[in-house]
Image (tube, rainbow, N blue to C red; front, side, top):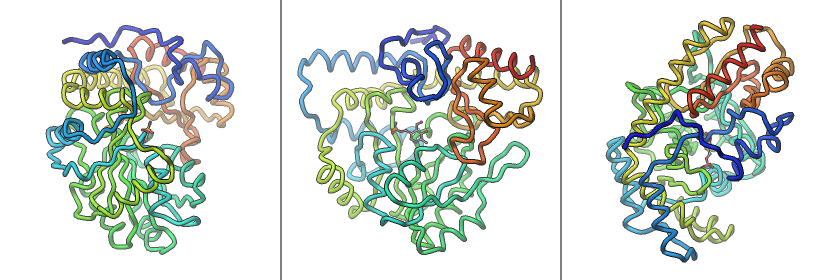
Length: 392
Ligand SMILES: Cc1ncc(COP(=O)(O)O)c(C=O)c1O
């Protein structure tokens, strides 16, 4: 089946956080603000998922549901075997209501209050919220930026990992918002440093399927024998199912799995799974590949278009097509505006809601993150408005 991702789909009155609730989440946004902020797609969902959800609705009853069936587990493991040559023991899967809630559980069971948790800013800001919200400390191992390419600072990472007060690292792979897909060498080095200093490594690979043509994403756990690496992944980002609240984590340590269930089921009372999320994930991983291949082509074309537009119409901006994610990160420091001045132009004058770079850490000041998983006409409208307020 051929999908039409150019078609604009009306998301009014679907409880969309991105569109309907933009005013609640982005200070200064209005009802008619063009929203290219939070990471969900404005594309129609894969037809096999829609069909599976319809079929599930037709079963008429939505009682407590458990995801741990052979059918569900093999859908998940089959996907990672086909797409990443990763053979996962189905017993190692832990299902949670989302990657961010999973990180919250992991923080509580694997670290103590006051412990340091290493992250690499500028990075997905809920990492910070979960760390500080759970009474742990953010230990920043900032990424370096040179010639438009971000890299890890391994000397700094080693110094921070060697401090016994720092007990966990949260790696973002691919990295949101800088768009890097880490090389095997980088992943091995980060994993080795963590292993050497007994730092548990959470590898958030929620964007693992969303990489550019010709770029290879490798699961961190495939490159290391450490069972202190926990991989968080989900069909929700790949197939745009975030509202169905389900994710899959790969946890090879039985002890950690038991502690996880004791926290999630025992102390939080989250004993089941989301019935619609289970049906959708199963269909996505079993039958979603045709749709995903078309989305990947469309995203590549959107990002290429964006690079050309920026080169021509926003000449003071610096831009590199991200290797992974659909969240291009644009460096607007060349316009010489302060953070509030930039925001006044983008949100106040252009009436666009983007994710302002500084929310990912002070290293992001002067950058904006744009959500390019939208019809080309919406992306064009956004870029035209930006050119108008920045270039006149
Ligand atoms: C790196 C990263 N992790 C986690 C999430 C959210 O995961 P969930 O909706 O499963 O909590 C996102 C969403 O954008 C993300 O970019």
